View 1 (cartoon, rainbow, N blue to C red):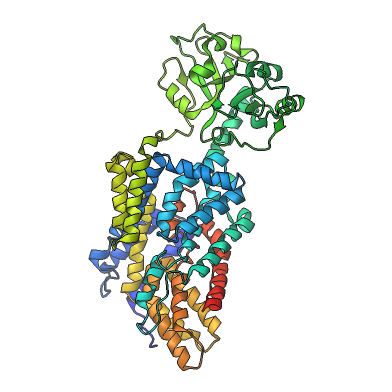
View 2: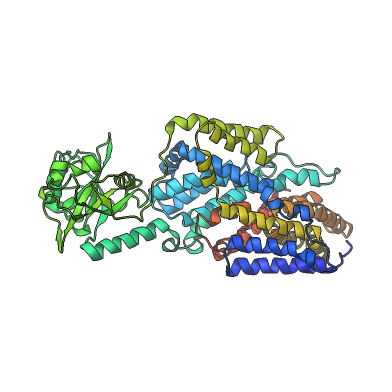
Length: 617
């Protein structure tokens, strides 16, 4: 292959690539701002005398209208619609039924489900649709999203290698190969994809605790829960925890009222599951049933004492109450009884605070005194501060009640309630989108846009809800990076790297040639998109294999072309892939998190892919 001349335009593109890496790794500015800076500099090149524009003026803002960006916007709206209709809650419950509540199992089931779904739809679509599911699972089990999003995203990317229609590089593969080479079948790549997906799941199962961001650094709910706990401990002396106990058939608690149990042990029953109904903030006169479960709030020592004396099973974590007692759904709050409140002069017992308002009163601050004993008989006075345990949705309702002043403002505001009546319209809109993707020749973006419009037109979402469902940070990140890939292609920089890189390989064993080709594709995928890398390198790799055959090296052109298409999904190191860009903001990730999680995985992906490819072909 003839060398490509090194021009000033190519050097400018190399400089922009270097600046992109610098901005992303150091995060001097936010990553989406960095992408827009690069976009601006690409446009400014045309002002340099004697330098040709590296991206035509009409294509400079093509990222904002690209199929990838429109598809991402549409699929975010579809995902939000499915979440609003309650579909994602049901899927989350199904996943929890199979996965249990440990981080490793939840991660493995989520990653496996997303990876397999990606085999028949674009990876960005599968990842975006599963975002609401992951949010539900994270909140219910108490696992920070930062511990689940990267494994899910990487599995979605890897799932693109399961069939020939699962990712753009594999869709393009047969069209880019010479006519005299045999085409690949739909499932020829499936063993490769399954091996890679299993490797990704095993990698995070074994090494996730070290390569994923630490939970305290990225979980906003956990941080809020810790700061709230410290506040109430310092101010009111409340050092409480929530534990779940199971009431066995032989337990002394069977038939006891909640009020009597609380009074004897100085704890609060904030959840009651009798097998038929799960009650949050149950009334004091409710009876504890054998075979049921209790969520108890109080000092650990008192909970343990109550459990031991009554022969109940004290569990290490929450099971029946995992979702309702998670920081996303309930917690401790402060309320004030204002002058003029109709509650003044009334007692907690008379008002039935739990039934009427969904509040379990833990403490009452009156002047300099903190009241905590026999609160059911205490009559409210103007200015009393109530420390309560409640569900956030009930607290939000009390903000409109003139009998209270809600002092707690920083709590997770519940989303708009689910609309179960919209399940079928939501599913129908999604089915239309998937049907158009699978059975028509419409572009992915247009097909998914149809599903998004269906969500709005059928009333699952309002248009304002649709706007709120979009992560605009992701949109502008991709809009700024897509022109960089165009610049690499238009200027000849991509071809210069490819041609000169392959010429430098020289006379080496075929497996070394394959590995170097794999690394070259991986580099291109990070900066000029997997489609651009595939379009550029499949023809070059075939030509290179034919030249190697002429030199007596057993290099199969089909295998080399396949290596390019598979390597184009090896995009874990930077948030430049659409899926990585999608999870960047919700996970609270930094670029260093992708480098840490994807560094070793990138090499493992190379080894497993080449090993399976050479065993099969």
